[in-house]
Length: 95
Image (cartoon, rainbow, N blue to C red; front, top):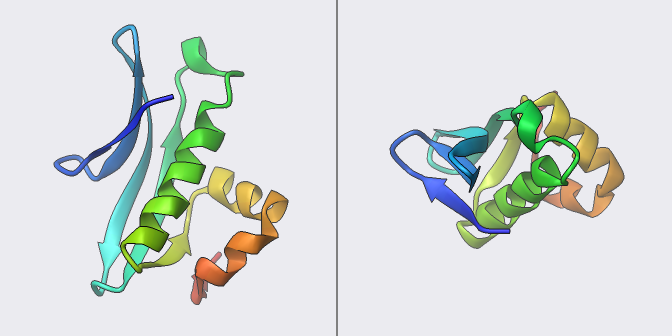
């Protein structure tokens, strides 16, 4: 599954047949990255795309030495299933 970083729109994207699923992010104080919102259109649901976007996002944050701020409910649920990722969280901004 190919996911790209759309730097112009600040989102990680998966595209299939012209349909785009994405996880929006924002940078905060240069040391943090906030995962804001995940969108998977109905035509792509049930294929593990939101999970793949979250995996990609956490790998990206780790590679770029960014602490993670979580505002997206899906990413919050993903972290509960993957507690090993909590070390990447900025505890001040985990909601």
